[in-house]
Image 1: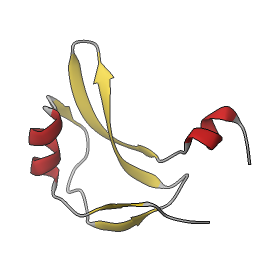
Image 2: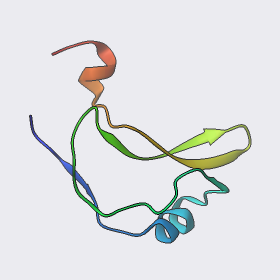
Image 3: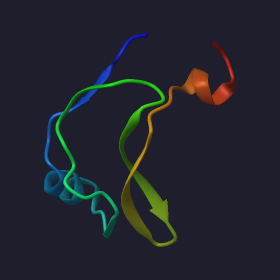
Image 4: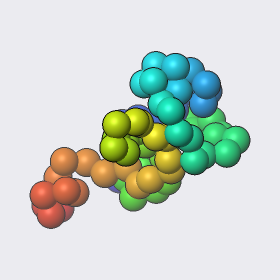
Length: 67
């Protein structure tokens, strides 16, 4: 399994960069590696706003059902 991503910035920087209105992540820890199918911060659209939540990282191949 490979990891291509890391989260090296803090929660406030993510909020400012993506203009997040709602955040449902408390005390986001530093994540030097983000593996597929493990929790990671996700910015998603929620109606007219964006929200920051912990979700599972997935690759395009995962979404298409390939292995």
